[in-house]
Length: 345
Ligand code: TXA
Ligand code: MG
Image (cartoon, rainbow, N blue to C red; front, side):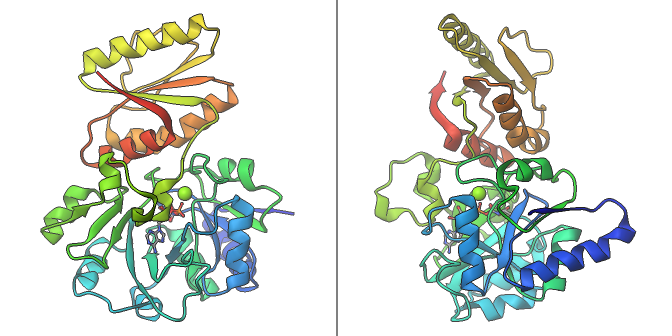
């Protein structure tokens, strides 16, 4: 049975979080909100508990997990050969949506890191997440709390949809603030390498660090299997059931192309959904959803909109691309990973 722990009134919080922490300490699984998306947590140092995460999600065992900590000092127990810029990065961006990849210490079991010699660590910026980690007194391994390859959950309802009956508890803390996952930065290379764009932008990191390498897979280059630094890179991800087509380019051309595609697929009797960033659009399709105009709003609504389109049984989702800068880089990355094709116009 999965307990749903609703946290709305502050006075309830203590006992709910204590109950969840106890489950984690005893090797169970608890889904909890962070500032990015909901995570599916287990004691990161307990191999049996961590194994259950992979089973519940149906996640391939070579895809490593992020270890969440509640105190910056914890990093010294989990990692070794910590490069000089790490502390500056922690000071500037933690707690927050930045995950740092470092050489792992012996304390971290291999199942947590998918067999790698490195460990990904972050300190989330969320009252419930931090208090859960502190109360449980263990670092918490947590991937996004969705079934493998499904869109990440930004509401407890999404977690319930995917994982109810498979885990011990779900903490419902409402809608997550950012909506896309953390930025993953590999500090074992010099300069550091961006492995996944996310809540902290590449521009912010470049300004702070001077130089940041962007992994070639993020630039759309075809990569040999061996060269996937972050195993998550090689899998289809964040995807709704419907086929996603992303159209990118000049705004007016994009709109024309989106409508052409919608017309074409509707003629083939497909249920066509359009995701737009223009409130005053004039699209004709079976389902149309406005996700917001600014990057912040789009990121926040993206995964939720995919799930809504799935519920309404869309066959094809046509999405307007966004500019590949700032948070737009993370948005485009998630759109492309979920899509069967990207069309440039
Ligand atoms: O915002 C987030 O990061 C959320 C919340 C719950 O914290 N978590 C999340 O976890 O997105 P997950 O497991 O869905 O994505 C983790 C990503 C994967 O792409 C994985 O391959 C990469 O981080 N990763 C983890 N450990 C790594 C390592 N040692 N080296 C390289 N990449 C790693
Ligand atoms: Mg994920």
